[in-house]
Image 1 (spheres, rainbow, N blue to C red):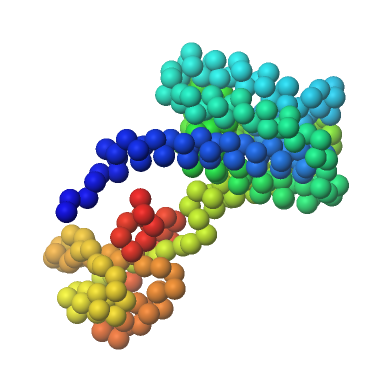
Image 2: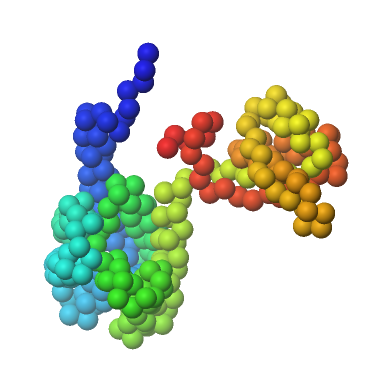
Length: 289
């Protein structure tokens, strides 16, 4: 019986779209809670429009939810004008739902008055939220759109543009609050970026091995039988002899590394093995694409 193609299944597509919007809403709520209970009460302006709203709240006592909405609207319009419609409805939902979620949770009050804890857990909360939003193939707009516009017209790398904008916000917090708050903001930024990676990629780490050996068939067969993993032969030539010398490539779970290493060592103690981390592996035997 022929399997139905998920991509061509209208029902599956509709479910995926609904899930994307749920990710955006859930992620925005995570970001809003982390902002209101950790970052804002401790004056940690760790980048983005939320960082700007923290600074303006400290200077003028302006309501953060209104400040974020006031920044997101023109930035979203500028994105439409300069970048086109590629980020579409999902980013619009993220841009406008996040300030609304901040408004809904603004009375929750501080969960800690220790700035370091606020920066750490605020960074984790914001990172979790943004990671979930990114899983919904969207963003919360804000300074990300400004960075994309600068990137498009300046030729600077997108990461550089994001770092420049966030750096200016953190620097501003130093002058508005004090240097300690600026350092806490840097901690919050770092924790946020790492948490986004964890949400996007996961905690699991796989290993990718390149094996150069004269006993390719024996090692390949042993990996199939004893480790239950596939092996790919890559075409290669020796730099000194220029003779063809295929390389075996294999991706395994971290827990299987010792077993595979022993298999290779037993068959060919002189094999040359290169091991590297594979952040995310999709396919049979690993996560589904």
